Image 1 (spheres, rainbow, N blue to C red):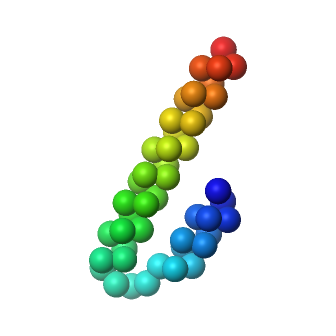
Image 2: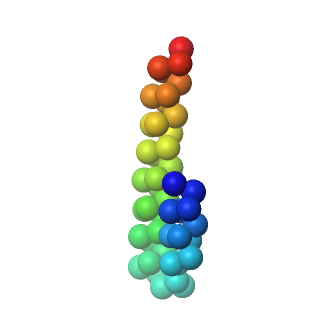
Length: 45
């Protein structure tokens, strides 16, 4: 997962469209990580 994020970072250009897509990807990735964390926490409780 970390490597994938680093790879995405390396693909970023100064193009506005790319920046918007990058923000959407990061937002989605963060949401997914939070959900995974919540599920993991629920299982451990």
